[in-house]
Length: 182
View 1 (cartoon, rainbow, N blue to C red):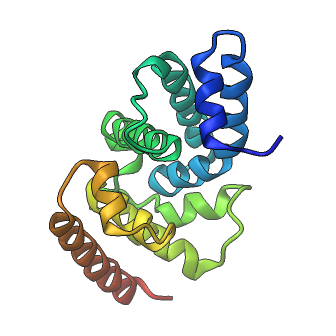
View 2: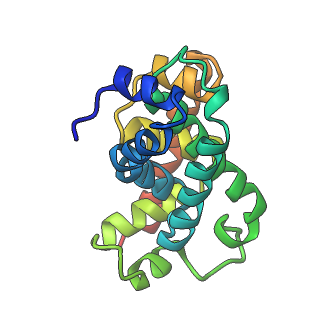
């Protein structure tokens, strides 16, 4: 079944076709959302858990989707917020403190789902050292090539603040990589 947003929206409004339409949404956006979340929290298992929460929250709040934005934007907002909420709750597990020598790089290298090299692991470690908002802005801009205007709607903040966060994040990442290069 091809994905047509207007058709899906009409099907979501009809109780008889709502479940089928939602299943189409899940098929359409699961992988994209997974990678957005994964780049923020870095763990495959945590990303899967968060994804379940994202789709559960979306299903439970379908009636509140006001069609002011695309379904994808609405889902991205839910996913990013769930990932940030997760990070806040698990701060000690995924934020790296000065005395935490079990590096993100080592955890990634041990992750069977990580297929990058040492430099990519170092980049991920540098990203993990960023504050949550800078990490999110960086991943959305760098990996997803999201425009600031779209990010502004998604994160409900100004484009100027996003540009500043991205600039600071890139400076911090560059400095981290320079200091820890192999």
